[in-house]
Amino acid sequence: MNESVDASASLRARTTELRDEIARAFVGQQDVVDGVILALLAGGHVLLEGVPGLGKTLLVKALAATFGGRFSRIQFTPDLMPSDVSGHAVYNPKTETFRIRRGPVFANLLLADEINRAPAKTQAALLEVMQENQVTIEGQSAPVAPPFMTVATQNPVEHEGTYPLPEAQLDRFLLKVLIDYPSHADEVAVVSTVTGGRVGDTLDIGAVRTVMQPADVIAAQTLVARTRMDESVIDYAVRIVRETREASGIRMGAGPRGSIALIRAARASAVLEDRDFVTPDDVKRVTLPALRHRIALAPELEIEAYRPDDILSELLEGVSAPRR
Image 1: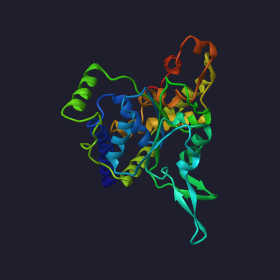
Image 2: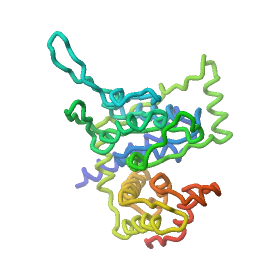
Image 3: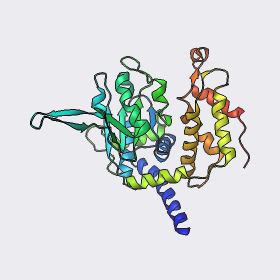
Image 4: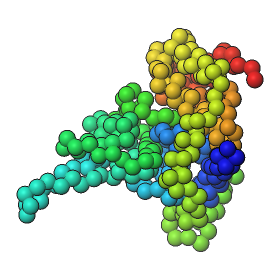
């Protein structure tokens, strides 16, 4: 029993080390870093949204370096085909047989860069693997080795030549994390590092150490899934989600998958904070990233430039949290 407790404590401690290692390459934006780590620990996928040049790709590369898994990147473009993502069959004239060539989706950490640059049929190539951790090529299903996580990036400002993700695809992402401009001090640190005796503007991840192996990530995900969560806290999370279906100003609320995402992310938040139980504060912490992409605002609020975060923040104030 003591060995099990010690192993769990050691594993929770190592998950917090991910923050420190990522910080060696990605400066500041702690909420963004935590959001990506939470998705990894919960075994989910994350949509990372921000204008160009904020280090979205750097963050994902740094994360990949921390756990020693196989990393793959796909640059989504309008001419990208579904087979470029999942793979395709190649004919061998010598043997007169077809051989399956696996695509870049067969990785532990997949970066789908600028996912809204590709048309819907190419975006849909990720639906199966994100939901079922397998890929079907020419009628043959092949599993993707765990752990598997997709981090997709998109630019919210540029609309020309883009294809908005449909609701079914958005719902596959456990979290939607927004990345904003860095603070003055963080930007000074970044500029000083990049321009200090280096040629070009490439950001280095060489200082990032590997602190976990894929097997450790799987063990951490199991630990998250078993983290204690009182029935009253589960009820609190469900009440928050159900409120999105009844609140004025929201024309489409979150479905049951939103409740599931909220609970999974809250458990990951507890582990990241080195606790073996979930509190209502964990639920509050992950409500915005877990639900902001699962609701749709009424047209009149969109005209007035309201954001999902504005409505969700107001909604949270009106849902009573359980007392400890």
